[in-house]
Length: 92
Image (cartoon, rainbow, N blue to C red; front, side, top):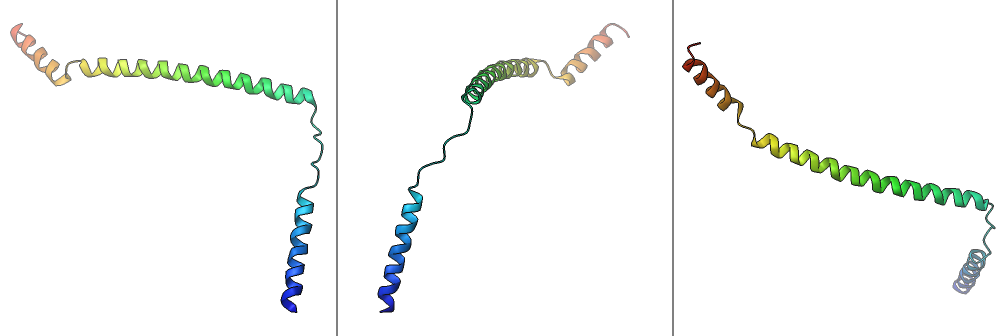
């Protein structure tokens, strides 16, 4: 008997929750001009993001080029050795 009453109470609770979950939504109180302003702001932010990404790619390329140039320069120890030989040869 107790099992039947628990079963019916469970069914009633599920039905009540299902009915409450299917209620109509609250109407939106947002002004349409606010929505349009937010869309325009989003579009401007997306354009700024694209611009920043392009600038980042350009700066990264410049950095890579500078690193390649820096790595292709002769070693300072080699330059100092050559300078010492030149000084020695010039009588200094």
